[in-house]
Amino acid sequence: MAEAKTRTDIINALEDHIADNGGKYKQWCVGVTTSPRDALYATHKVREGKDAAISRRAPDAQQAREVVKYFTQTQGAAQGRQDDGDGSVHVFAYRIRRHTKP
Image (tube, rainbow, N blue to C red):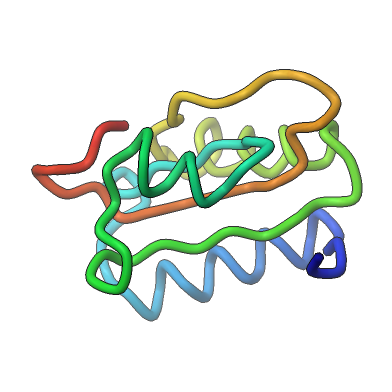
């Protein structure tokens, strides 16, 4: 399993990914989950290898939720359907497309 990153590390990684893949924050969806693969590809219908997407593991659910709050309330990103609970430590983001389901 990948090493957990701090809230700041995750924010920086997502901001870099968004900058590298274009679009304004409002064109991106951010959420937390226990399973980033299921959330991105099954729930949100992101196309693996074709759509811009990223996930990072936070040390705990609180820090993961703080990252989502930063992007949704401060930067204007859409909030994706997400898991709630202590196991939801994975933050995910993807660029919204016609076929994705925020």
